[in-house]
Amino acid sequence: MNLLSLLLASRSPRRRELVALLGLPFDVTTADVPEDPLADESPAQVVTRLSQAKACANSNATIAAATMVAATTVAAIIIACDTVVALDGEILGKPRDGVEATEMLRRLRGRAHAVYSAVTLLEPGTGRTSTEVAKTQLVMRTYTDAEMAAYVASGDPLDKAGAYAIQHPGFHPVASLRGCYANVVGLPLCHLTRGLRSLGVEPPHDVPTACQAHTGRRCLVYGAVLGCDDKERCQRRMINDK
Picture 1 (cartoon, rainbow, N blue to C red):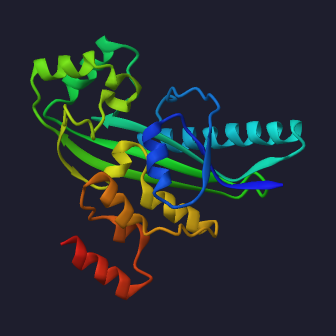
Picture 2 (tube, helix red, strand yellow):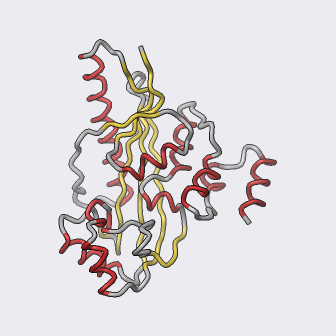
């Protein structure tokens, strides 16, 4: 039996880039799960439920596929993630069209909001699971109507929660943030690392260093997420971050 270390349940190229920073081999799969929030769900509850549903759906599909091909390939750990934007307690998902994208961006302009992501890990063979939730607080800049219209016309907002990508090189919608930058991109890497550690998997790469190099952003929260079990290495990294 050929065991893949990780199986990422996502179509997002941004999540694929981030998972690659772990230094672990992985493959990609998808299984469709309805993403509509339920009545009275908080943002954290929505992303938790949906990430767990995606993990289970992809686990069932993987096991069924492995059975059909005489179990030649089985994923060791499935990674499933869900991300939402919350404005004044209201959940903003992916816009259905340009009109809805424009409305979301207009509502977010110049205002504070939060981005929530949940990462669920599931071992199909054992049923062991782990879910981590990340929250990042942001303030949008006061972009102009013309900037907003050009961004919507590019088509980029249509597959993004809240209708924007924080890393977009032309739009740059965010003025400031507090928390994990990679979470807003779509996958909080340190939370993923913490979940992997709970299942006995240690990424070979220094994840905070790799993430900061990839995003070009200094991170102030990795210590709180991952802790500092290696005091000397943590102190060295903190000095280098200054």
